[in-house]
Length: 140
Image 1 (cartoon, helix red, strand yellow):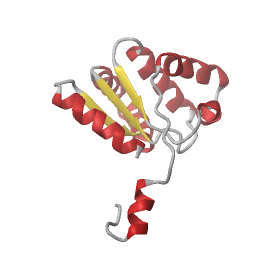
Image 2: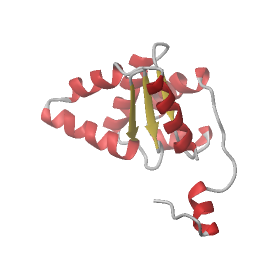
Image 3: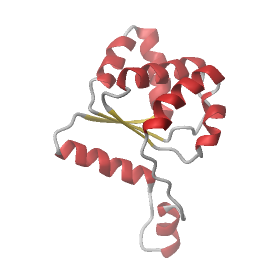
């Protein structure tokens, strides 16, 4: 359900003509490492920074490596107070430091997210599970 809501927010932003981009974190951070290797990192980061709305889905499914931490901090630092960022995750804020890693970088990242955020905490069963159990639809 959180991913669905983030997608709906992104869709509405597009309808209102805001430049919007969606990334799954499991794909974004490894790709950013590849962009560093091929010399297109700055171009890709600039592209992300120019978006009015940035959606980062499935944050925290795996711990961040040092380069991913630094990239996330760079992205958030450049967007802070200027552009909107939607972060979707299924972990409580109390576990973010463990997922991010390095305490100093985690503090900096959390400081740019938590204090100015609107948080929606969802409860209940997964929508995918619901569709699988009622037999009417199979989630993909």
